[in-house]
Length: 123
Image 1 (spheres, rainbow, N blue to C red):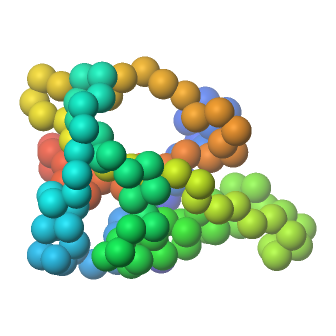
Image 2 (tube, rainbow, N blue to C red):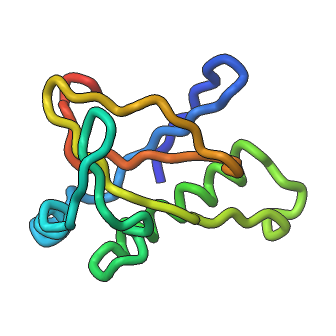
């Protein structure tokens, strides 16, 4: 897994890429997921989207990325002594002119984002 770690202020940020382009089936699943309104954008109704059928490969990648973050950033003496899990996951849809509202993630050691479809200019 190729990855870069950026130490921004005192908070490290790890950036990696999904190993393969998303398949047509994965993209169709994302675009067919029930969505509701949110503040400034739209969001999936499910708050455990990675536990939904069809998202297994994306969840596996997310967990592998989380495990790499633990090993490379937290650097536990015994790599098997610290295991973090994904407790929530959802999809956000933000159209031009929309925005992602200010929020926080209580009880989270780390938060992550997987961009499934984004503006290539902002890579």
